[in-house]
Image (cartoon, rainbow, N blue to C red):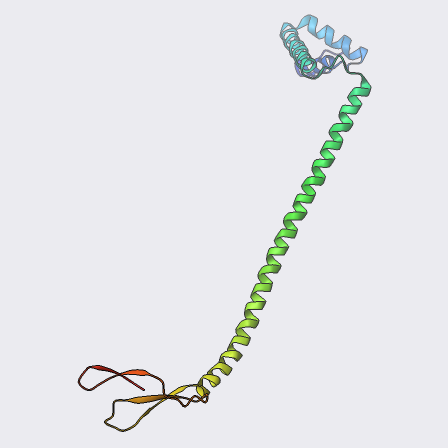
Length: 176
């Protein structure tokens, strides 16, 4: 049998801690450990670490009162919970997408409505301007020196309106 190097002995020691050695490999490791105090120290530390990890896992995860059926039920419940979480997250994501689409559609509708209103306003303001010209007030003076005047509307109201005017001396007067 060939002698093991320190690196080969360390790899075999790790496999031995996991109980994965073949009998031939175990014999080679034991022969090397009998002759090498440094590797014996490494294996002792490795065995201590392996035992400490095993104790920690048992204290954290061991459930002495649970049967395999109970453990299977816990796993199944956890899987169902994860499935429900995924469904809820998917629905929330879909709702965010739908809400974003609704906001975009509302904005688009508002812009189109505003654009149409602007077009109809320009047509309406042209019509209103023409209408204003037809309904505008006109002022008629009786003579060049007279300071009284009448406001006459073209909508058929030929009755004079009361409009305050200024007289040449600066006083105010109301004319009919």
